[in-house]
Image (cartoon, helix red, strand yellow):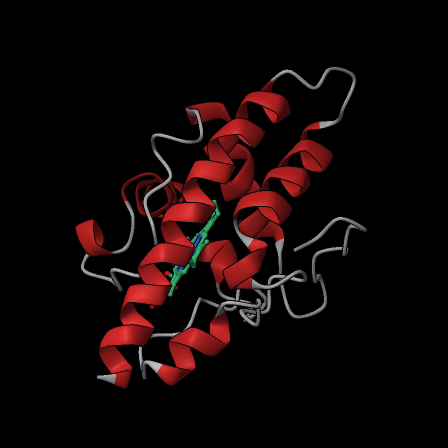
Length: 142
Ligand code: HEC
């Protein structure tokens, strides 16, 4: 029963999150005069850091729910091997989600919220993040 309720809460959180996320995408895609890395960081902090963590270490606010569900934790992108993960693989997971790629169904698909260019920016960020290259925390990180 507790597990059912927790699962329902998780779905609620995820759907609230994606509705909220859509409007931010529109904002971020029209932000002029920003360098690509800083645009990518903004998108990461808005859409991904709740699960993957503000510094990309997999310890976002939602990670605790996954721990309670005994489910795969959000990936820690600072492990040092993401540089060698092919861009096409990362792109398809971000766009189509975990379940469509034989990974956890709790990695949501973002293909309807982010355009191809925005996903490419995220792929670059993930590939560049490493043990000694954690993401800089932004003041509005979630
Ligand atoms: C609601 C939580 C949640 C959000 C939000 C989320 N993720 Fe994930 N993500 C996960 C979980 C859980 C996994 C682990 C999947 C697994 O191990 O099977 C994951 C896995 C991944 C992977 C696969 C990495 C690997 O280990 O090969 C990539 C890439 C990824 N996420 C990118 C992103 C990006 C980029 C965003 C933001 C656009 C994002 N995720 C937002 C929960 C989330």
